[in-house]
Image 1: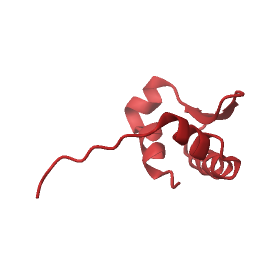
Image 2: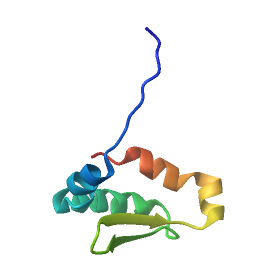
Image 3: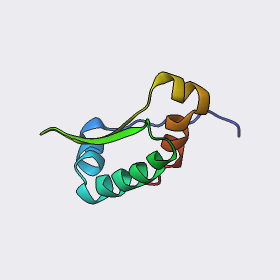
Image 4: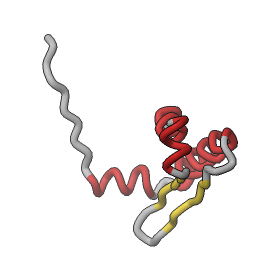
Length: 79
């Protein structure tokens, strides 16, 4: 039974249930802020426009290339 699995997200529902969920976004923001402490060059901010909320983490390309910190952070976030 080794078949392919396909996930399809309904953008409108995803936006409503995830990107407009203040409690969830607060939790994700806290997690990312905590993980960002591993390197002083990582910047974290919350982007709230009227349509949705996102948590943004940035690091210089050299830091990401050497350590893979952003990739690791993304993989460690628990929703």
